[in-house]
Length: 272
Image 1 (cartoon, rainbow, N blue to C red):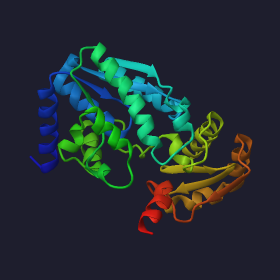
Image 2: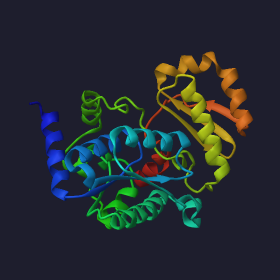
Image 3: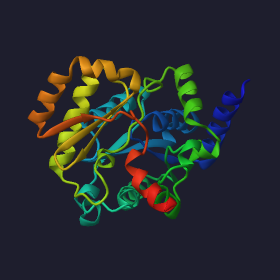
Image 4: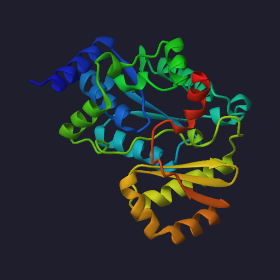
C-alpha cells in the first residue's frame, strides 16, 4: 500500500467517524473526490449541497447534477444570492470571505434541516498558501476539511481520482468568476456573463487551463505557454467573438496562466 492509498483510507475513516455529513459540492477536482469518499464511508448518511450562483458557470452546476445522479447521492441545490450582496459587489480584498460566509452559513442550515451532523468542504493541503480570506470563513463556521486533515495535496487528489475513474481527475483548476475582476472594480452580472462566455469559447476551442481577466471592458487572457501558438492561430476569430461579448480590447498575458494572479498587487503591497 503506497502513501497515497494510506491517506485515502485515512480520509474515509475520518469521514466515517463523523456519522453523517453534507459535502459542499462544487463539481471541482477536490470536492468530487471528497464526495466519492464520503459516499463510500457514510452511504445514505452523506448528501451533497450545491450553491447555484451567478459567479459559477451554468455548465459547472449541470456537471454536479450528472455526477450525483451517477453516484447515487442525494443532492440539494439552492440559489445563492451572495453575488447580490452590496459588500460583495463592491469587490473588496476580502470579497471571498464575504461570499463564503454567506454561502456556507446557508449550507449549514440546509445540512441541519436534513439531519447532517457536519458540513465538509474540499480544500486540500496546497490551499494553505497564497491569499485566501475564504478559509477564515470556513474556520469561523466550524466547517471540516477532511482532505487537508488527511494531508492530501492536489497532485495526490488527481492521482487517486484517476485510479477511481472519476471524470474530474484531469479537470482544470477553477475558481469563481468574480476572481477575474480586480479588487475595487464593481462586480456586475454583465461582467460575469462576459467572462463566462469568453472562457467557454476558449474551452470549446481546446484550451485546457484558461482565465479571462477583465478590467473595464478590456480582456486579458491567461493560458498555458504551450498553448500560446494555438491562440495566435485563431486570434482573429477569438478577438471578434470577444468583442461580440462586449470587450473593447483583447490581450494575451505573456506570463501565462498562474493561480491567484489578481493577488499580485496585494502581495506587492505587503512586501512594500
